Image (cartoon, rainbow, N blue to C red; front, side, top):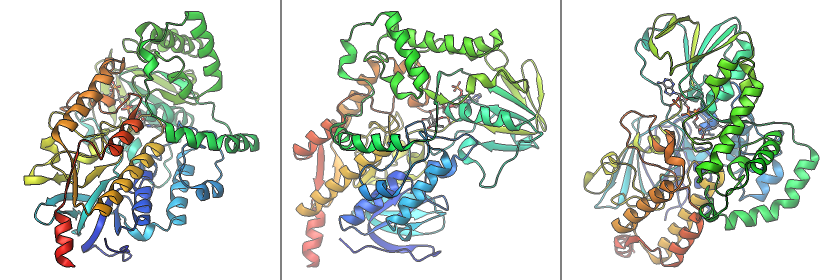
Length: 552
Ligand code: N01
């Protein structure tokens, strides 16, 4: 394998030959570049944005903040990075997380490997030469044995096609494509569509700045308080004291949101649950809630108590009972759409400049030059914010025209839903890896450590291939089908499919309704066992050996 290829600053890359192309320079892509270079591969990164950071580059809307505690939302693999970086808040804001990504890229000297402002348009597998030809929107063309898609599970924004939106003369923003320059809402009448995690974070901040804020809500969401605060020396000390155990637990971690005990655990008495939820509410954060009882995401009776608890909190917080009722999620279980974490979200509806519009009762009919018209009312606005989410998990993978063996497109291969063995590889697309792809824990839990695990797995696999002179890897059809079935079966045993969430792709018109993340326990154990069993379920090609031998 060739030595590392460095980028010529500003040049449009063409004719580059390398071992691996890494698409995306978020946390997954940056670590992939580092790790693959470390094992001796020549690597090249391509990134659509002008900078590193991935989702944290784009999602710079007011209030954007992580809901995984920052001490854990960090690379776990590097003691140096850990020593040299000090988080300031329990939950880091977007700016600080982006600074951390920049710090990691600089400290690891990765920028020279990345071509920024460059989108991958097409990746075609050249069967004869067993290489991927990667073409960019800037006319670049690279050839690589391996392609690592580190394109992120939440990176392609979803903007609903509301009649008249193109006529709106005021400013239009999407939370996932927020401008670089400061946005001022002072003195403005602002409308916001969407009350998922992004909307729930942005609404309190916009409400403080705007003259008037109209929230267009289709589905109320469960949300719990973040109780963000500055980290103290004691917090850092206690994290450091527990570090060894945390790293060991990651190694053993099975990620799963639904533990094996979920199906046998007893139903705890309502008052026991209520008391526990009260403590969790005061502590803040979503992690405790989702693990409060082993069967909380499986047993409807247990789940309903958590749902009642949050509804009660909404009633206690929101002064107008009608608004409180409209904000209360009903008809789907607690925690099976991504649980939101907020700062003063429900309290914001007590402000006199904030109005909630319940789209279940009065759907949006059209947008005009200066207003949003619902079935019942006319709202004149100066600016509109779409907090309408993403084409999640598969969106960024399918946005690239990927063609595998016999010219089959990934779009066709996944027309009935994504099919990937362990969420990493797909039949017919040799040497193409997805980091946090569908059928892996992907967007569940701590995405940074999920990414790290996939990168380590891929690096180990490529080392294995090099040692044995293997040319290609791809899954066997049966192994892939069995895994896809297993992912669905695990989800079907839980309450997750009972909500119309982006986990199922239902937010995107025409997207097959398939539960995309793997939510069972045992993911890492399964991956380890498969490797130990000589990569059970994978087929390796050996033609590169012959090529190499011929060349020598
Ligand atoms: O997107 P969402 P998000 N008309 O899909 C509504 C991560 N994240 O960007 O539910 C009217 O959750 C839609 O309504 P409905 C996190 O994983 C993390 O908020 O489809 N409304 C919903 O209310 C999160 O889950 C953090 O009925 C329309 C909203 O738009 C994921 O990103 C922060 C509509 C979309 O909610 C996505 O969150 C932010 C229409 N036509 C994001 N179309 C943290 O770490 C859609 N909606 C804290």
